[in-house]
Length: 277
Ligand SMILES: [Zn+2]
Image 1 (cartoon, rainbow, N blue to C red):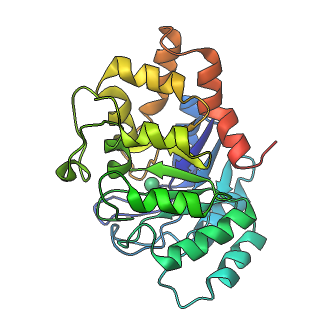
Image 2 (tube, rainbow, N blue to C red; image 1 turned 90 degrees about the vertical axis):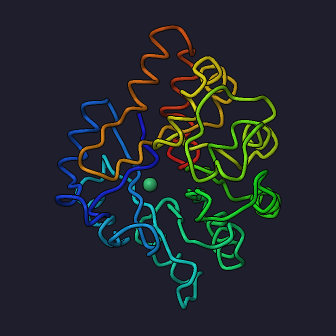
């Protein structure tokens, strides 16, 4: 299996210490994850500390068979943004994210970077949580950007993205984990059908909540969008476990999802997005 969304290092003051490579590899081995993308944290808003691209690259250099480096550049950097992205491409980075700046999702500086990511063949993981990568209910800005940048693959993640799985989403839910049955007509299912360059990163409490709030809907969603969903865990604290992995394994064992869907979501979709084959 491949985890497209994992963190290393120390993100929060409240943590006792950093997430070490050793800790992460043990967790990956426990769940059968062979490789994981490490996402740096280069935006200042939502964590206590930065985890730099350099820190991620160092860990990946020590464990090249297990870790895949992503690159993160704050769009408010002096730039030139293209030069910085090329620098990290040449050092071996394979994707961008997770972008978590408190800016409109289609801030011109972000769009400029994501266009370059498309040229590089890099997927872009955005943390869309209401107060970062800001958009309205129904994602008018996100949809315009997906149309403007057809060569860039985007992975949607976090509270706002996953709240829009349901057609009855309200503005106050986009920073939360809405519970209960999923109403047909959600913007996210529509967008996954409409935009070939949009994928869903099922990591974190937000992805897990979206899949489990209405269990039978969740299984149908995994099956229907088996070509558009990618396993991620978003482990960012020492006491977290990868609860999404047992959830998927149990769904497979219970016959709720097919082996084909399981394999695509846990491995082959990521291989394609990351150009590994
Ligand atoms: Zn994350």
